[in-house]
Length: 217
Ligand SMILES: [Ca+2]
Ligand SMILES: [Ca+2]
Image (cartoon, rainbow, N blue to C red; front, side, top):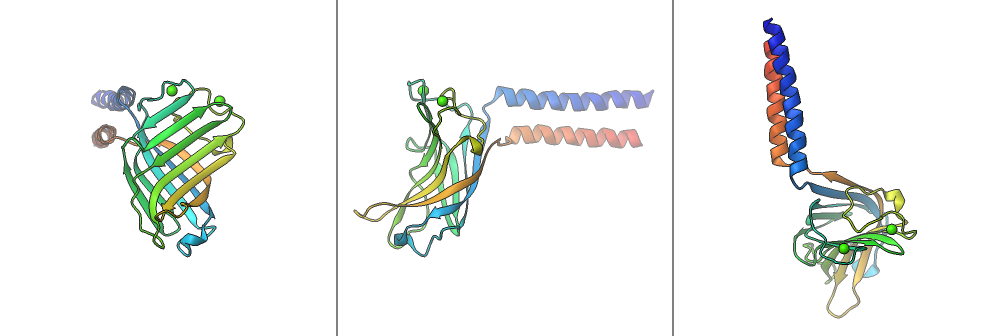
């Protein structure tokens, strides 16, 4: 009898933690982390020897799924405010806090579709007198079929795009700017677990452990 009550409570604990977890996800904006990997395909001699073709590249940034589109055009989505940019090209690390008007995601649903991200105030070391001015990620589907709207995508499949590049842009006075370009070989969009979700998950697991112990006793 006592065991049955405990079993009931055990089930209730699982059900409530699942329900709480789901309702939390639905009620709040979900931060999405976009991360990618690739390798350097263009390394300007002006920046040698800091970058070499073939260097491993990785990067990420975060954007809220609820970020609103500030472009009235129904086929152009301009989303301000990606944050926490981290790009690594070989051993060269660049970051950007993001969140300012120039830091954007632009989604185009036109003759070709594209997804472009820029961070305009990056932090990274100078290279041969050149300073870092931009972090970029650009995906293009020349067939124009990957997006049907200008909505912020919550998933990205690299195979849908014929151009997929990450770029570091450097400037030195009035000299032409120099781009270090990486070909992207993988990309993913994932929800970042919120502290609240983790807390619920944690308390749910603690409850399970408690009931499991009671059942065994
Ligand atoms: Ca729009
Ligand atoms: Ca389209």
